[in-house]
Image 1 (tube, rainbow, N blue to C red):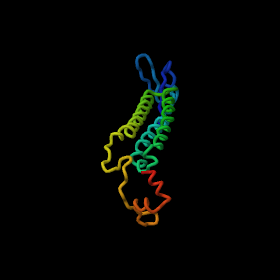
Image 2 (tube, rainbow, N blue to C red):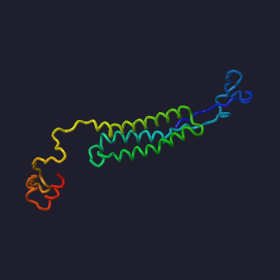
Image 3 (tube, helix red, strand yellow):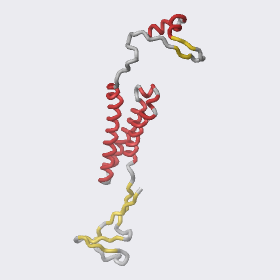
Image 4 (tube, rainbow, N blue to C red):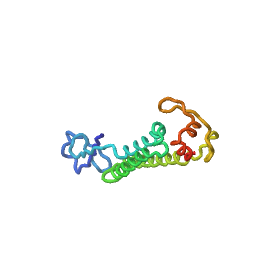
Length: 182
């Protein structure tokens, strides 16, 4: 938090001349140095605009570093969209705070740039997740729809080896389910 002292022009510089310094600028006289005629205003960071921007960055980075590892958040990035939604709540509040009242030009500029960057981050995220992934090459070894799966062997929960052919031939309960899925 910064404190800015705004010095107001005086009508006459006759009073308080011993404690103050007089500066002539055109035909106005300013008195600096004591608290008479000084307005103090505290400048604060626009927390809403910065919170929205940081949430946008968190939403973008968290998908590629953490959430892409889990199928529930990789296939549909709902957690990231919740974070972008929270950022979308903070950004208009930050812009409103910057453009109403006695907001400075710098605060208006910074808040506008943060909002623009946040919207750009959302646009890049949507492009990468939904459009660019469609251009990935197809896997050559993956089975096609309707094609019979090749036989494979895996370990079950008890550690026993189980193959697809033994499941299809021996277990009458799971055979219809496995045939329906293939």
